[in-house]
Image 1 (cartoon, rainbow, N blue to C red):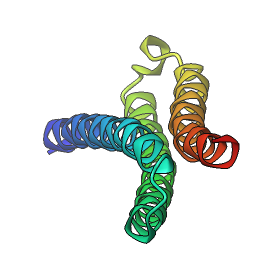
Image 2: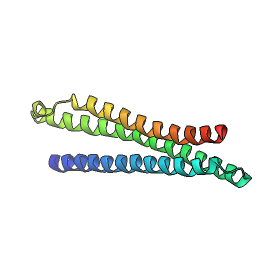
Image 3: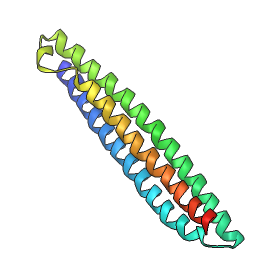
Length: 135
């Protein structure tokens, strides 16, 4: 039974990694698309252009918020799963083979992912806004 629990935790960690990857790639892709589209729309002087510009910004804001929340939850889940593994390894006398400092590396990595997502989101907002205001 212990082996099945171990396999289940490992599988959950794999799912967690895949989900995080999808979140990050989706946010980056959307931010880059928003940057391009809104930069083009920034030159438009039509009402439709301004409305589209605003809607893209709202969409990007919502998606980025969802991604940041998703990454935060992913980080929390990963920590819980790894701590469960560590407890299991400790109970079996195998804890010396898993360095728990790995958790700090994961925390740092999640912070960096979040910074990248937020930074591209902010640039997707600011660059077209600057173009609109200065043109």
